[in-house]
Amino acid sequence: MCGIAGHVGPTAGELLPAMLGLLKHRGPDDSGIYSSDDVGLGMTRLAIIDLVTGQQPMSDPTGRYWIVFNGEIYNFRQLRTMLEADGRPFRTRSDTEVILQSYVAYGEACVERFRGMFAFAIWDTARRRLFLARDRLGKKPLYYWHRGHLFLFASEPKALLCHPAVSRALDWPAFQHYLAFGYTPAARSIFDSIEKLPPAHTATLADGRLTLARYWRLPPADPAPHRPGLAESAAAMRDELREAVRLRLESDVPLGVFLSGGLDSSAVVATMRELTSGRIATFSVGFGGGAAPSYDELPYARMVARRFETDHHEEILEPDVRAMLPAIVRAFDEPFADSSAIPTSIVAQATAHHVKVALSGIGGDETFGGYPRYLGLRLSQAHGRLPRWLRHASRALARRLPDSGGSRNWSDRVRRFTDQPDASPCDRYIGWTRFFSDADLATLARPALAAHLEPGLDASRRAAFADGAHDDPVDGAFRVDLDAYLPDDLLAMADRMSMSHSLEVRAPFCDHRIVEASLGLASRTKIPGARLKALLKIAFAGVLPDAVLSHPKQGFMIPLGEWLRRDLRPTLDELLAPDRVRARGLFEVEAVERLKREHLSGARTHADRLWTLMMAEVWMREYLDQHGLATFR
Image 1 (tube, rainbow, N blue to C red):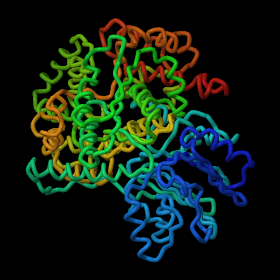
Image 2 (image 1 turned 135 degrees about the vertical axis):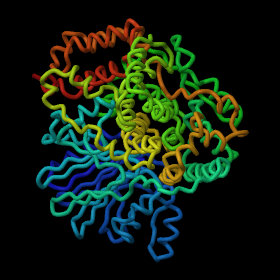
Image 3 (image 1 turned 120 degrees about the vertical axis):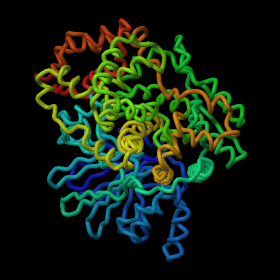
Image 4 (image 1 turned 60 degrees about the horizontal axis):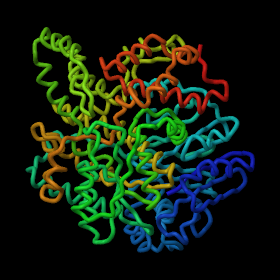
């Protein structure tokens, strides 16, 4: 696991060392630079595999090809055996060298053979060509900047911002996407001059021209799918998960597990215990400060830890998180509004005190159907068949319902469910995943922002939804989440929060073969009736404690709504003070004040919306204010 950076084109000699200095948290164990003429590759290394001979940048035996690599290739031993059978020599035991030799043997198609998480760059000295690649689901990040004869790349934007030509000017479409969904989109960053290599893409830089290519997509829906029974499907998925976990136990250093107490992370622990009789370290987060019980899964985590005899560690998170906000923003370099970043950072920090690698249950909800909104989409089909007057009447009634505390605010869910009575299933589903709708943004935006708001924000999600099985909107919803929410929110969060503490996170449920296998099943196989994640529950029946299998999904969430009314109230008031909002020039003061009044009074829950605006303000203070770029007129 590493931070990587590089350039093609003339730069100052101190640029690459400065870039690597800002990526040191991603790899504190070692660093290295390859430099020749106007090309430089650099890395900072978190040593996990081949601790002795795996240093980077690494070259092939001829010295023609050089690589820097961030990630893990879990099937590297199998690939190495194949390459050695073809007569290719190896000088190390590392997966880095397997990537390099695969590129020499198979060219750019080598990425199709890799099973893992990766972002890497290979420089061909003979052809003066740079090849970049990113894994299928985007577990590892890769940003780049390209102007004229200079090309820069790095694991995080902060390294690119070292160069004086890289602008901090706001990318307005990315900012609009952030306000809508809480994170920036796959191919753009918050800076208008910095782009991301999207997941499942490669890029080739030759003669100053950059060419992108996509090498993997979510498999299309089968028009006549095989429909195996639940028991058969559960056994097959259990086998797939076992293999994914087995591959992710490859490490030359100790590893552990993020154990939330939910089904997904508990299944990972259970599978690990099947594969090893050795020590398993588990790490959990709970909430102090009188948090609602519906947010606390520690009792379930303890059950799992006892069942599988793990070395269990707990961290209690108190609601005084104000001091964490600048550090979280600096870890992303972009505004990020998923408040789960707070407990993720806490558990990563606690885990890093004990191990360098941790497995996680990320991806289980998207692959096996864990979100209540999937059931809502199924119910909406019946709701859509009601007379139009009745659908609109239900919306009016829902708007009168008072909000409730806890992690499952049913009143808010009912309002969101009935809010678009005439919308298509696709529009409804996308609407449920947004913090601010187009109408909300039109009301919220001052002219400086309104001038940049554009239609078509949901186009990629609509395309993903349309790829779903005919007459099965839930399959379309799976594809939306696997195409956008999982890579751009959850996996980005896991990478930044873990790597900020020099910890590597591995996600077995995000193995692309599990994703492909799960999409090969009808949604009603994964969610029969109204039982979320039933297939996974059947697979682990009799293995996990019954209480873990039966308790409702809670998610890795903080009691944000209550904290904003109590402990975080001063932070809310300071970040979104009317004078501050007015000075920024982006949002209508009265629109922000209405959100605050309704939330603080308990009349409505606007925690996610307020947090989105708060984190935007923190980001602008950290990245724009000192450069005179953060007031808009």
